[in-house]
Image 1 (cartoon, rainbow, N blue to C red):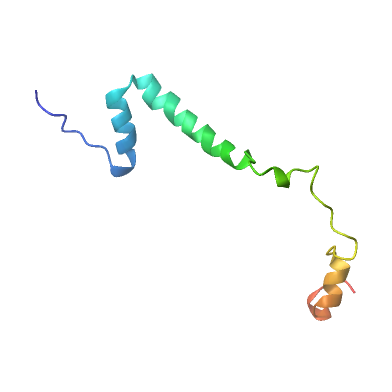
Image 2 (image 1 turned 90 degrees about the horizontal axis):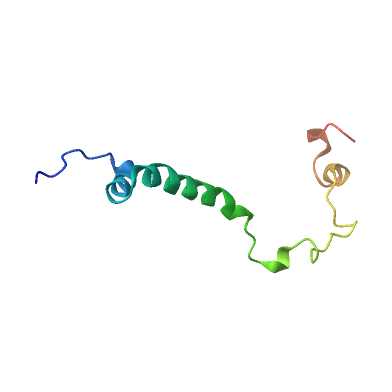
Length: 82
């Protein structure tokens, strides 16, 4: 049997390997879609329970940063408000 002479560029080699081992619908549509959806959802999976909203403490009013406090702490000629 003659080997397949076609070779995909390096960034498609994984997809070409999937196509050689699985049906085209599964390798060309299902797996890549699953990987993309998983990559989109990963940042929203919070495994650290200490950062949940119930346990988050709000900053005190003296430590809050507001535009007024910025103008007092920086040069007044750089900011448009007094």
